[in-house]
Length: 168
Image 1 (cartoon, rainbow, N blue to C red):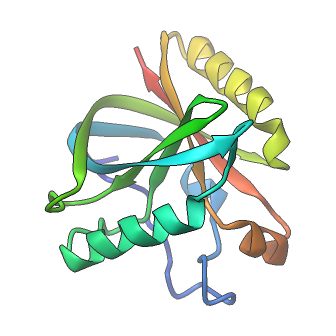
Image 2 (image 1 turned 180 degrees about the vertical axis):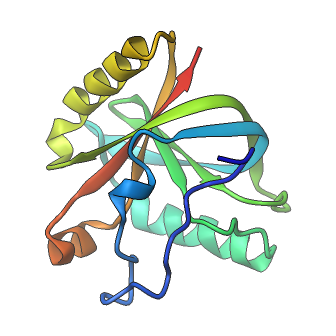
């Protein structure tokens, strides 16, 4: 895969009119190569890891990205719980977004696709860490990419989540 490339999302495969259908084969086992890949950083408030203001934060952040014409060719939001009360979300963009907090990621990141209830997230993170070790690498920071909203996951019959771990 090319540097800073993200697997394509087929926006036309969208029977819900909300989240496009996720294709796990495009992500599972893929290594992303980032070199100063820009992301908009946003935060949510959580209650025991359940985000309380996710809809508002997603809408506000996405509106700023669209206004700046900075949207990446493929949709990707990397999420990471910093505590039971707070989470950070990194929105992939192609260019900086004025007024937004920007971060850059560099390095190689292994992707592993999971499917199941959100309560399985601790097991997914353990399995992702094991996959990194099995690849002969040292696990770095881990993120989860929630591929669809809960309503679309119910419609599609799959709650696909991509674990993304930095390879050290």
